[in-house]
Length: 121
Image (tube, rainbow, N blue to C red; front, side):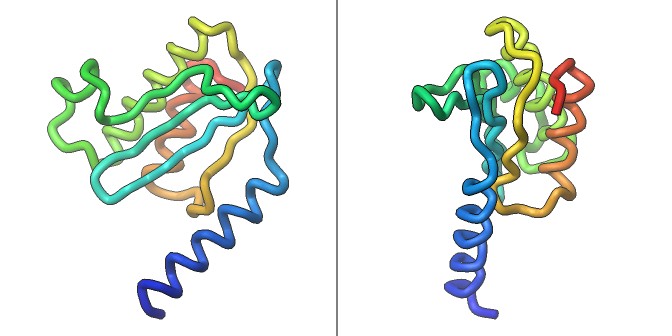
């Protein structure tokens, strides 16, 4: 499978997930984007098209404490930070959008850390 085919397959999976997952004010969508070096997470209200809270390995709070930003430990730290920011915005329940990626590795670590932080999904 070539790189172009892999990117096309990922795009199709993303679209398929987005057809089923929709965030509201009461239960926003927890969107996860994973690159080779970093991981990003957002709480999105799709009815208004607004981001309620966000966290990533590029945040100043995490950048100093993390050795490497592309690890499972970094994903756990992002999940905990996002859960704290969700509490500040008074969000308790979310819908999980894995962004077409497998629920494995860094995506799974972020999800479990955010659950431990208090988010329900």
